[in-house]
Amino acid sequence: MAGSRCAPKNVTPSDNDAGQGDHDKGGREVRSGLRLAVLFGGRSCEHEVSVTSARSMLAAMNRDRYDIKLVGIDKAGRWLVSPDPAKFIAQSEVAGSDLTPVQISQSPATDDASGASPQTLDVDVIFPLLHGPFGEDGTVQGLLELSGIPYVGSGVLGSAVGMDKDMAKRVLDAARIPQVPWRMIRRIDWRRDPDAILDGLADEFAGTIFVKPANLGSSVGVSRAVTREERRAAIDEAAQFDLKIIVETEATGCKEIECAVLGNDTPQASTVGEIIPASEFYDYNDKYVDGRSRTEIPASLDENIIARVRELAVEVFQAVGALGLARVDFFVGETEQEIYVNEINTMPGFTPISMYPKLWEASGLPYAELVDRLIELAIERHSERSDLKTSL
Ligand SMILES: Nc1ncnc2c1ncn2[C@@H]1O[C@H](COP(=O)(O)OP(=O)(O)O)[C@@H](O)[C@H]1O
Ligand SMILES: [Mg+2]
Image (cartoon, rainbow, N blue to C red):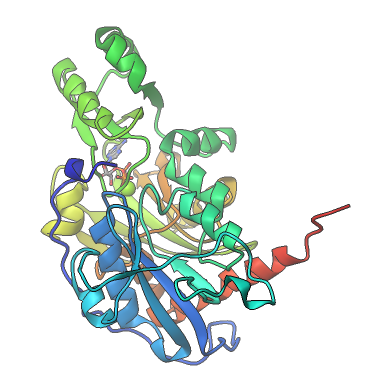
């Protein structure tokens, strides 16, 4: 994603300060002294969001339990460490002349010390706190998979499916999970004959539509469109960001509801929250710049609807093959028949205003314990796979 195409950012810093405690909810003791690398920044438009997420997480987590290494990924994709981690994380983006490159080995660690060059990141677990392409889409997960280091969150498949709205929607359709009517347009077809596509859309989508790039997040490139010319402009806009564009029916008269999911094989759903956007829809400014949108936790919804949303959140998580954590977003109307899944985010934000940690706080799991649990889940998942046969 070209940096120049990204919206301007002014992400507010965090002074979030949450929970404490030596045991997670299940009473399990969390390992101490674990060498943890937090990856933040990244090559996507959500670079600054990720930096804010990392700053917020660092402020809130049980830092004494971990030997934490901050690894910033700059917009060019370089992995960097700093001699001054506090300053490193206080900036809005990963940049500076005092940074030194670091890499992880693509070979799993072995007993001999052959791979232990000074530039090699040698840690027990990695938290890839990266949003969007080259972070949340399976690319970094593939690298971490090769390195043999346990990492937080979904693997290659779940991350890739979750990131690509076209693939995610196909998977959810196959699992009979309710969504608004949608269609994918290939940019190559759009550029070849936009009017034919607009004609087709006029037949298929009578009212207001939403247009979005298939592979982004944070509302970058998302527009609402009514008239033919608005539709044209909206598709042109989304086509700047992706080769695949999603067009879908507007969910009218609905609330935007979010549910946090945590776990591997038996994922649990949190209480649900409502986003009340300050603008026409929950756009980038609303999310990160002026912060005028509000959240309501728990959302004021009928009990049956809340129960159904939580059930669907777990179904979505399992359908896309997510692991560790994900936030599942919905449009919810007045009745159980009007619950539509909007999307799954396999690495949701951890900024001060982010729903994922807030929903768990409201469900009785403080931020610090949530981070401990996510790290435990990463290690559990890794050890579960370690006894798989790799030869006959
Ligand atoms: N079909 C829709 N109906 C109503 N609002 C929508 C629809 N699709 C998107 N939106 C609005 O646009 C925002 C961003 O769209 P979303 O699909 O969540 O993209 P992103 O992955 O960038 O968060 C949503 O939070 C919502 O406010
Ligand atoms: Mg969204």
